[in-house]
Amino acid sequence: MQQDKSILIVGATGGIGSHTAKALAKQGYGLIISARHLDKLESLKAQLLQLGAAGVECFVLDLQDSSAIKGLFQFIQKQVKHLYGLVNCAGTLHESPLMMIRPDDIQAQVNLHLTSSILLAQYASRLMVRNKQGVIVFLSSVVAAQGASGQALYAACKSSLFGLTKSLAKELGGQNIRVNLIEPGFIETELVAHYSDEQRAELKQQTALKSLGQADDVAQLISFLISSKARYITAQNIAVDGGLALS
Amino acid sequence: MFEDKLKQAFVNALSIEENEVTAELAYSQHPKWDSTAHMVLIAELESSFDIMLDTDDIIDMSSYQKAGEIIQKYIA
Image 1: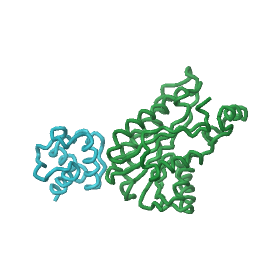
Image 2: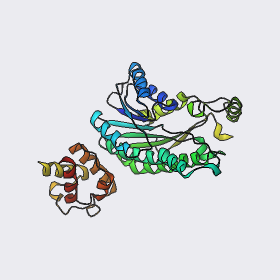
Image 3: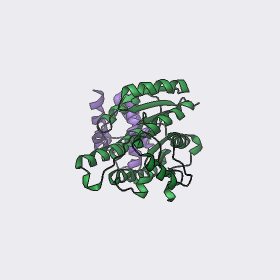
Image 4: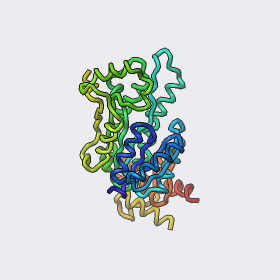
């Protein structure tokens, strides 16, 4: 059981976020779950407690409001004894041809993916340093390295997390804080619910395993990276894509 | 009390002797107060005083004396 370790999951009510929360709850971690809607958080909280979470705190947060991130950590400082992990699952898949990307879209995507990741890491690391241990996991996408027509803005924002991960791993390693990046391939979540059957079939054929990923496939890797089994793993970017990156 | 707590936070975070903690103690001037130690110091101060500092104040915290002035704002 991991009841003395608390993990913050941002974007906790999405597909990968909720599966990650459930995987960590089963291992007995204390959880702080954050997302935009309280009703979804409360519903998830009930499930997590049933699964064995040592405790669950909910915090409503819109990452477009950078100033609200400090409030999240003030809350954590009061509620939780020891913040051990941060998993940032928040994000939306912005799809738009280059000619149709508005300046406001750019700012919103940068805020959501990059600015929030930097600020979350900044505040989280300050709490982790107190105990000289911690783990940070960011979520990117195979699109970051491979590119995708119509996803230039999304890919640009996600690829920025590569440099962030490598740099923070170096900067925080001396404090025993590990930082890793996961690059999911096509994972069947709400994020890609609008994809047609034809698009899904095509993507399936592009993977080495000839199948699409599930949110739990990513959650299991996050769970491993959080655990002490991964104590010597940092500064890594790891794909969970069924071999899509080979295509 | 405040002074003792502040001094102890510096001793703990920078791993220095109490007699080294003076008003002149300054960031990057003392060999043990580098950017890594600054992060540890911020964590120590926030933990000791149960506060969460603004980034601007973290950047401004360039000396022991300045640290005292900044912390006072949060606990006043």
